[in-house]
Image (cartoon, rainbow, N blue to C red):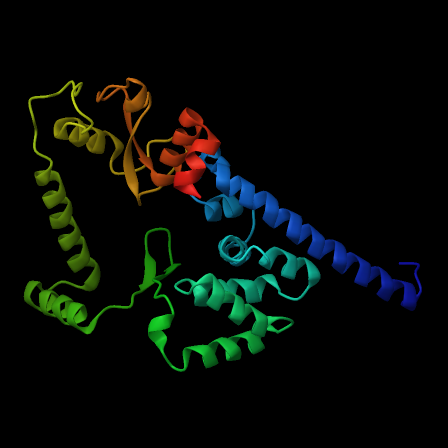
Length: 281
């Protein structure tokens, strides 16, 4: 590279400013993608899946951006702090994890103390805020694939739950995997048994979807979002293709099992972004 030392350092400083400005604009655009739930049209049930699968971010980079988006929804000034270099994505992500259950005012106070802090400095500051109160930090399950058919899971359980699990394993002579599989199968059997078949198969009366229609849809979907390309199994909801408010019927052909994201995106398309903003954002 044919450039003097001085010019090289000047150029790097200039490029860092461009990078921070790009982070600011990217966050603004991602915020609008989130508002419209646009990633749903691509088959993704979350911003995280959109970032990792579509935009090819690493999981760590995606988590930092998702957390920063959530933090900026609570405190809009966060985006400007990132553009100015007062706050890094890493520190913003930590601040979001820490402040999930805090008010915007308290979150702003914490952010003031995190300005221009490194990762390690931010950790120490946040630890001082907790004062050893681990209940302030959200508990998460940790999953690490170890083969094509197995995943190592780190769970945080109440002692009472763990004692019951160990007792059940001892009685049945099961390992943890066998015990959980047995109990989960029982749980799904109970779910299915509670969906009683009714005579109203057409479902043209009232807002409630007939239970026999629900049962057939759950069987058809195998408890997975039915939007093409989506593999979400959480927060599943029954969605009318032609909305009930617009005359849609409670029929198998008119109802899909969608994840919450695809349900919300469907509502945005049916009723408009402005109307749905009051419910979704």
